[in-house]
Length: 185
Image (cartoon, rainbow, N blue to C red; front, side):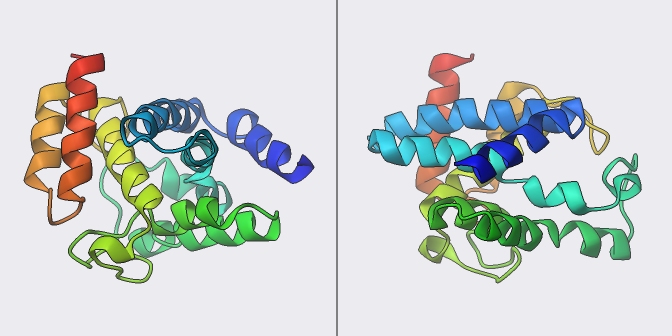
């Protein structure tokens, strides 16, 4: 699929190193979770592609906002919160599988319904998007970025547990934490 390769090349060659590493680490953990959940090989491949492309909508946002050190103001937050729908639209136009589109669109939905773009709640959020949400948050917490200081792996796992049932699926937080403790710690 030529469109798929073009978007993946855009992701890895057309953007900053931080986002490239974030996408790659997200895909690695996505494969581990897929295997732990006994997903089929085809589902794991979709999950990995979705992990690589979940933030593709950010590429069309102003770089000065994305790379702004410190807190974003209200207008800047609104601009950044558009990236899931922008990404989903790009992926839909490129002919991607619906599950990959859903990952891009719904990876900022919260388990309690307070996320965006649609305020989905609990199992209304597609499972693959729930998985990427957890992995993405963990990577942001444990990697160098302009938004916050780096947390230890254990501190990040504690924060995921603290937000279990609010931001994240309790079951998937348990699965992810088990994997991290087994594979990383």
